[in-house]
Amino acid sequence: MAGISPEMTPLRVPVILAVQPWFFDHAPAGRAVLPMVEILQLLAAETKRRFPEIDVRVMRDGRFARFLELRAGAATMWLAVELEPMADGSVQAVLLRKKKLPGMTRMVEHARVVFSRWSERREEPGAPVGQSLFTASTIMDAGRVYDTYIPLGPAYRSLKGSLAMNDQEVRAAVQAPVMKQRSFGEDLLGSPFPLDGAMHAAAVLGRRHLGRIPLPVAFGGRVVHLPARPGVGYNARAVLRVKEENRLTFDLRLEEEQGGVCEEVIGLVMQEIV
Image (cartoon, rainbow, N blue to C red; front, side):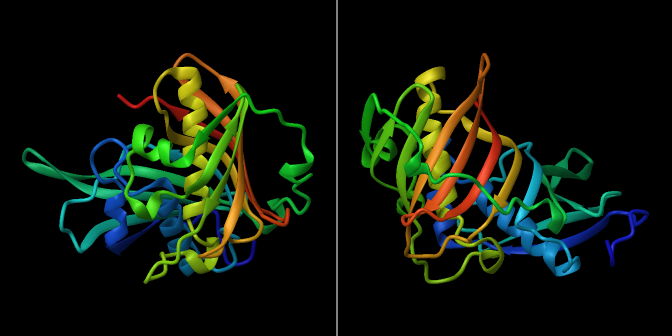
């Protein structure tokens, strides 16, 4: 790919993240952490800034090694993004943060993802959710999800109405809120809130199998076909593909209410976090 040499050494870029007030609404484990969707927005923005020829709406091999905790009252956070061109023309982005240890400091990895080439985008995502067969065995109010299972503040309560599920699949409506400020990377990937809501739905289905709410730790691929827009409602579906002892693998799909596919996540791995 023009403009990218696979012989380039990784480029480490310092990043000062402006901590938005709504970030503190995301505290699924009792402490505020930057959600996966916001991390992907940040990595996409930094990758596009340095490698404009990369299509950051096509991703693969996402890994989330540890929580990125937010310090109470913090206005900014000092981070680093390491960008490494790969032999196939894609770029791997790694999110790092400095950690103090006795007598030393070191950079700790929190997340990584590979942004792929334009040619890898799927142009025909398949039949809409509403055209596939589905019979629900359980209906759950979205308010119950957040009041009982996933304790999040108002900004990240993206699920609306009711969730319909059986042992293999869950469907739900999600809403992208209108915020006073745009999220970083929103012009590239769209609003991060609908996909976050889709993962909440997957987590509820996961609880049905594991007995506890699992959290996302990895994914195989993600394609953003139509970026989600603030203030707009979407339909979400999560299908269980693989069940293991303490982890589950899902495929996720986000659609416009008219049926147009917005994005897909393939091989989303969710597991219990001790």
